[in-house]
Image (cartoon, rainbow, N blue to C red; front, top):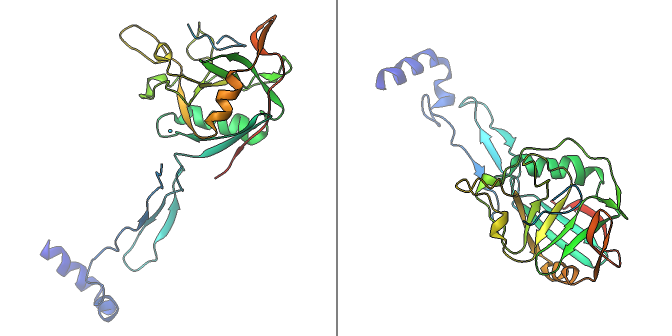
Length: 240
């Protein structure tokens, strides 16, 4: 170690005065700002987790200024604005990266959910949205891989992807919010239950979900338990 320091200092003799303050061959310390962790069928659910972006300084040379490299925010937040009130949700890209990216990039950030409805409400169980308006489907992107084995559980207030019960990797735009714990929807390797992927949790406005869950429902062809009076999702917006 000492020989290396001597060799390094010799080769930079002309810079001795400039480098004495920082020491021969020394590296600038890494600076970081940690993330803030304050923290179906095609039409229905088959009911058979914000932080600020992290900045990391990565020095390439002791005499060069540090380069600030932004890291992806693993806990982005969205607001689901509805005709019954607003619900704020914290997503969990650490545990469900594919699902969160699909939800945000394929749907939220291109306005897909604007003026859609909660098309399936199972009182005391789940409320489901993300299909279309008044029973008319909207064009969706390709299905994604099921990440239900990520360790997150379907407890009250969690945001979960809906999918076909026959195909694990079939989720697209539909999602549901659990009104109560639903262990039957969790991934279980032992029983070969592929599960439904949890990818976020309600952090504000759960009372709005409880209100929606009490809506009067009726069966309308392909839509069992659709609210009699439409409950509209006016928009879903990323807020951080």
